[in-house]
Length: 73
Image (cartoon, rainbow, N blue to C red; front, side):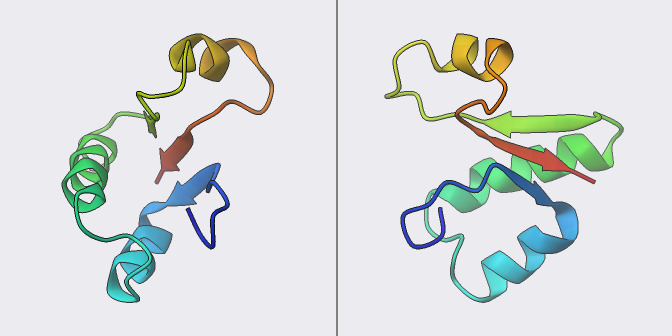
């Protein structure tokens, strides 16, 4: 999130900048790093979802906008 707004998509290059400037911090760093490693190893994309949102996986898959952050190369 940036200023309370969900990032719907970020690239590996963006992630480096967001960690460096403190936008991504704390407990999100290990989650992001796991997704980054997966994408670097050949996964097309990874998604981080908020586990507190009811039916988040279904909303991510079956709605146009989704509810998570898509991480791409």
